[in-house]
Length: 119
Image (cartoon, rainbow, N blue to C red):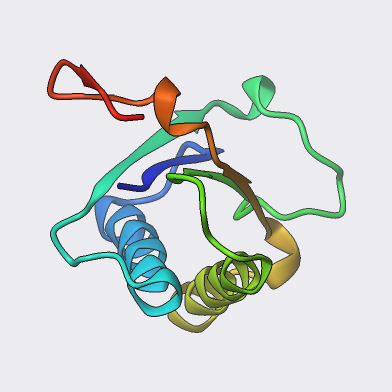
């Protein structure tokens, strides 16, 4: 049950944002084998003055946070990062250097689903 949060500058149209989410979701399917229905994603947009990053990055820069149940291998996580970044580059022309991905794996005891602690 990955939880995805994309942080990016305001100004992209709905089709662009949907494609971003689709690229990430397909990357999760292809690299770590999640089910197609397992889609919990959101985009947070910022005004330019509210998001700071190096001047050599473009306005397509984004930070993608992915929370996962623990247990994926280093190789699976590398495949996830490479696949999502590649999908965004191929589908939207986003430079690979404009994509930051952070994977977080909280212990199962820190997940609550349907009112029950997972671990």
